[in-house]
Image (tube, helix red, strand yellow):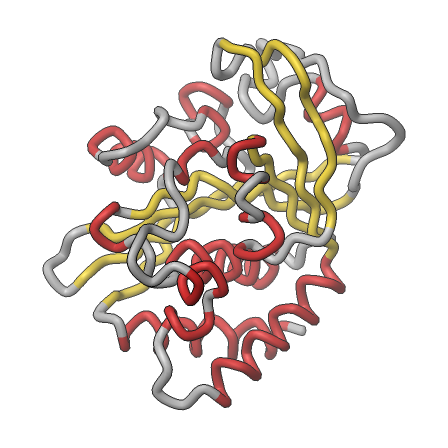
Length: 248
């Protein structure tokens, strides 16, 4: 498994290089926050990846995609979670508030949730100047692979709002197999009524998808991101996804 993940991360780094980008994996989420504070076209800073809002996680990282000019082209983060019931973790509000002062969230989730070592992946932002070329397809998949390689996860969890779900982003871009309604009503982290969905990618599915993507990239020769990303291929003349930072 680790060999597949390492090979995939290396191949994606080469794919990014073809489009003039460099991949950096950084450890300080406050640096991610600093990028987001200066970013254009965002809906604000996701508290899940702001240690001053949700507490210091046991471990975390963020992907920093940088252009040849040194300017940030895209970012996304991963946060380590270990729990015996992720649904309860969400209900307690621990994605958005610190353990010492949790602010619960009313959810639609029932039954036990994913358990074990998980990575909550999110905080995606793509510079408007670089949208529509496949970054919004590649970076979430890369993020899953980096989390799995770093932590040996049992699965990847995430949150997506209905406006992105309606575009087919979680399934087409992120490659997520399990999407279910999490919140339908008042959502205190945004201060408004929301329909929020939980995403889950189990480890076995992640590895198979990563292998499939790796084979496509290897077989693609000198193809670029745009040639692999379904939404980018469909809409070459407009951004593939708008307001990407609404994904916690």
